[in-house]
View 1 (tube, helix red, strand yellow):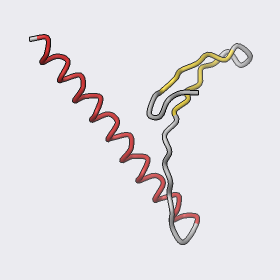
View 2 (spheres, rainbow, N blue to C red):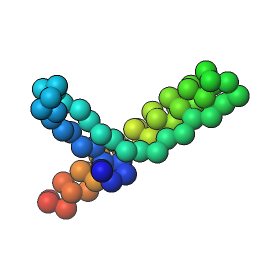
View 3 (cartoon, rainbow, N blue to C red):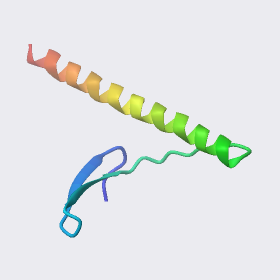
Length: 67
């Protein structure tokens, strides 16, 4: 099982295809199913943006330390 916010890419012998496991916990809520799904979409986009920003900052810090 991957750790939180870690992406694991695996190959499935049976289907001869790849699949990705990503284990964030993202919750959407609302008064209706539609509102809940829209909230989930916004939360997922925010989570992805945050993860990518953190990774980019880490890369920049690593590059600066090499100078």
